[in-house]
Image 1: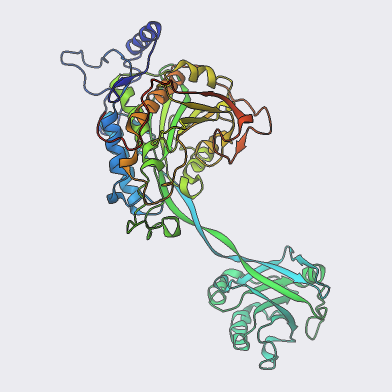
Image 2 (image 1 turned 90 degrees about the horizontal axis):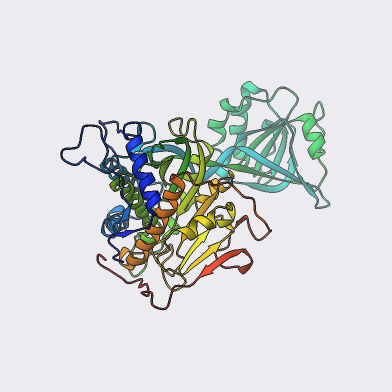
Length: 537
């Protein structure tokens, strides 16, 4: 079967049903864009009455346009599509332009759906404090009145304790390199007193007070610039947690030989990012959502991606053709096949492109936790999620489909569609390393299509010329069949794991026989897939 135009088989009754559905809901299901509106499938044939929709046909995967997306997204021009880079925006614009050309609507007013990505960390204003007694036993100080006044830019302190009567009465050189316990100055003069005390070169400073705690907002700007952390603790809390007595006059009393550690807690650094979403409304069950998704970010270059991307023979761009330009292009091609065929689903279809997968499933988690306040999510429910991640290197080990244990209906659906004579392993467990995991945690039935790891995984050698084009076309055909079956309204319900070997796992699909539902072998006469295959099929 030519890879450039592969159709998945539908029965005559399903063809008739699709035709009647298209006729009955032609006007009700028109997909509109903010710039006017078209219907999925492109222009109407010449002579067609205004507002009518051509009859539905069997969707066909067209390989060349899918591979063109892979080549563009994995080109050096996009510099590896790192999540926190302008290059990801270039990729998002390309994806959005494809949906606009297809006539598929965005979710809300824009194809970009923003979220905040907590990428990286920085020293926060809150401090942790541990006290270690002379016997070596230690405990964390967890009083209610423990106020961080200065984080020293994250510089921690761990040293023996020295008590002083007052900050301005400390003998020069007596507390250098130690964590100092001192009565807290009054709030009005606290910042100036601490800054003057900095000349004593302590490792850290613990202020013990009887009055109300100082307002940290008025002290932190000055205190954070000091080379040692500063914390305030109420006198009763110091006694309970640290065994420290604060007399009315004199230095705080602490057990000799005690040590204290101070460190700033890390807080995430927020960065703005965006998923890209498009949707075809359902005709009879619009509140039921079928999601087809893939992440479109990768790990960037040796500059933008930091240590994530390593140079190879002078190549400093981790292009990510398989990971995951392949999945991104496949989602786009399934959407094109549906629009070309004038497919009118009963359920709503959402095509999702996630950012931040490489940094911890950030985009899919954000979307699963807080879907946009727009149709179809306002009154809708995701009934199934199909995820495509690294689907471009079909080889001798075949295709892995993970997550079949998340619904009892998955295997009948999968066995009814054309598998392209591929070797396939059907895995019940759910791998937790890709975006479907964000939805499985919400008890949504999920599938994960995956062709396996390889030597170019997260390396500069993951180039588009290594994509198995024929294999990728066969996978796209199978995916389209699954999504159409779901879109037509096939029952699908979540199923909990049957054994401890199922549910969420971190191992690769097919690596443990106890969680494999089924394996199929490609027939001996089947064309052996070649990873090096190039050119249009």
